[in-house]
Image 1: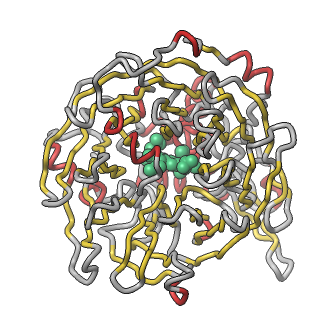
Image 2 (image 1 turned 180 degrees about the horizontal axis):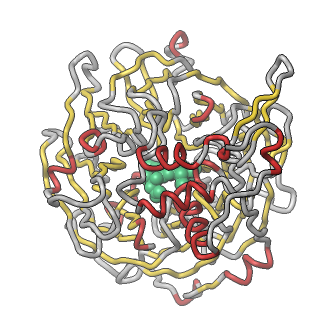
Length: 539
Ligand code: DHE
C-alpha cells in the first residue's frame, strides 16, 4: 500500500477504457452531486486521490481515496455509512462498485465549460409564443396538478390531483431534480441533472413542452420571476457544472445573461467549483436569492435591470444546499448542510439575520412552517446525519427570545431524512428517512401532531401501503407534498428502475390510506410539486 509523499508519484490505478467510461457515468449520476465534479467534497466527503491537510500546529496529514484503499472504498459504497452516505448494494452490481472504487482513486476528469454559444446552440423554441393557446384548452383543475419527477425514466408525469390519474407525460432531461411554477401558474419549468431545462405549457389539451435549452452539464435548480410586473417574464437556472447561473426569457428560454459563480469562499480561499444550490424568488422585490454551495455566499440578485445587474453578496456558511421561506416570506432559511448549520437571510434588509447551529447535516427541502404552541412561528428541518427534526424560531418581533434558535428537537424514526412537510390547513408535520440504510426505516415516515408535540409521533410504513410486493431495490418513501386544499399528503415509493413504483396518497386528517397511484409508466417517482403550493411557496 502506498504511503507518504511518495504516494502522489505512485502509479495511478487503472481501468479498461469501457469500465472507466461506465464508472465516470455512474460517478456523475450518483456521486458528483454530493462529492463534487472535481471531488472536493460538500454534502459528501472530499474524494480526491491524494490530499495533504495542514493542521494548525503545522503538521501535514495525508489522506485521500488512495490511502483509504480499494477494499475500504468498496465497503463504504456497498453498505453506506451512518453519516448519511447511502448504500449502493441494491442499485449497483458488485463489479460496478469495485470499478467505481477504483475510478475514485484516479485523477478526476475536468469537464468542459458551457458558455453562451453552447447554450444558444442547444436552445429550441418548440412552439412560439403566438402559436400557443390563448386560454386553457383542457378541463383539468390546474391548481391541483402535480408535476412528478420520474427520475430514471428521464420524464415528468403531470398528474391530475383530483382524479389521481396521469394527465400527460413529457420527455425531459435526465433525473429531473425540481419543478417550479411561473407566477401565473400556467408554465412548469423542470430541470434535469444534465442541465436540460424544459418549459411545459399547461394551457394545451395535454401538457406540452414549448421550449427547451441545455443550461449547463450538471444542474439542480430553476426559479421564475414572481414580483408584480415581472410575472412569467424571466427564468433563472443554476448549474453545478460549470459553476454559473443563467437568466432566460420566461416564455421562450432564450438565454439573456450568464453569470459565473467561481470565486473565494467565506474563509478567503479560491474555489474552482462553487455550485449553485437552491434559488428562490421574492414576492416583495424583483429579486432572487441564489445560494452558492462551496463558497457559502448568498447572493440577492436584482433582476429589474439585467444589463446593470445589482447583486448583494452575503457571507454565511459553507456548503449551502436547500432551503425555504419562513411563513412571512421575509426570511429565507438555507441549510449549510456539511457545516451543520442553517443560515438565515433577511431579504427586507438585505442582510444575514443569523447562523443557527444544528445537529449534523440539516436537509429541509423547503422546510415546514407552523405555529408552535409554546415557541410561536417555527420553521422545521430534518437531517441527513441525525435522527431529529430541528424546530427554529422565526418570529423576531413577537417571540424574540426564540428567534433564530433551535427551540426543540423532535425524534425522527431514523437519520437519512431528506424532507419535511406541513400545510397551513394541516395539524400534521411529516418527515421521511429515505437514505437510511435500514430498509424498514427508509420505507417509513414519522408524523407529529403540531398542536401537541409531547404526544408520541406515529411511524407509518408507506411502502407497505403501496403493496408492490418484493423488489430488488429498497422501496424508499420519499418527499411529502400536499394537494392544493391541504387535505391529502402524497409520498413517492421510490424503488429501482426495473421495479414497480407508486405514489401513496394519505388522508391528512385521519392519516389513513386514501389511494395508491400505480401505472406501468410510473418509473422511480421522486419529487412531486403541486402547482398551487409551488406557485405560492406554501410549505
Ligand atoms: Fe436534491 C432539492 C441538490 C440528492 C430530490 N436538491 C434540491 C436542491 C438542491 C439539491 C440544490 C434545492 C433546489 C432549489 O430549491 O432550488 N440533491 C442535491 C444534491 O446535490 C444531492 C445531495 C446529490 C445529487 O447527486 O443530486 C441531491 N435530491 C437528491 C436525491 O437523491 C433525490 C431524493 C432524488 C434525485 O432526484 O436524485 C433528490 N432534491 C430532490 C427534490 C428536491 C431537491 C425532490 C426538491 C424538494 C422540494 O420540495 O423543493
